[in-house]
Image (cartoon, rainbow, N blue to C red; front, side, top):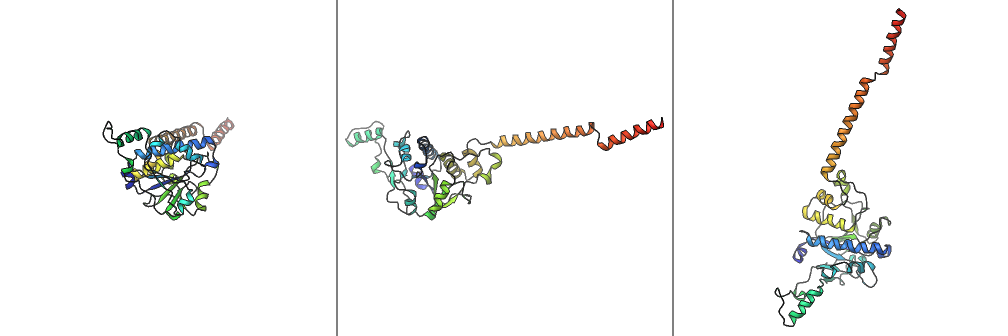
Length: 289
């Protein structure tokens, strides 16, 4: 995985600077969604390099929630930044950590190995001897794009050397334009996923996307370079293309049936002029009598 990360052209920062705006339950959900993001990235054929801003266990409940998710101690190749997104965007990257923690089991095996004991299954790779994961270098806000549905610019592709920011917030859409306003205040570019432009006809979804849904769409596009495929697979509650086509066909059949009923009604029920003509003939027949 680390080799694929070093070859990746894309960095993704999850902005964890919104803890004060969320309930404890929502903060826990942020941790769960980031766990899903890490799992998807690990499985992906085209993973992105992941980074977490505002990662301070002392004063950020979101950082604590992430650290408490199952398997966090085994995460590899994720970089943590204790400072806020604004500091990162200003080029301050001294606090970035090449985060590659070791599980308790591996640590136990390493200690035995360092003490001269043989370890079943062969030598355990020593993290201290491994090359460090890639690090973000000298960023500026001009190289960062905040992904938000409130942006005017529509994302067409992911640019190499650009860092994409996803807001680490779960608020059920209470705070309008939150990520957009933050990006603008920091002088960052903003962009939105091309949901309305690409596959609106096949979608039946109008809720805010979860953190992991946005990231899954990114990963799928990096793998396939196909927005329609990425969006249809990444957005929950979607209508499959086949289902949409079936609905269209059913709608056409319904319209045709209504048209036939209408035509039949016209045949069975004479028009007003025909009725008048019939009345006139009956009147003439009575007069001739």
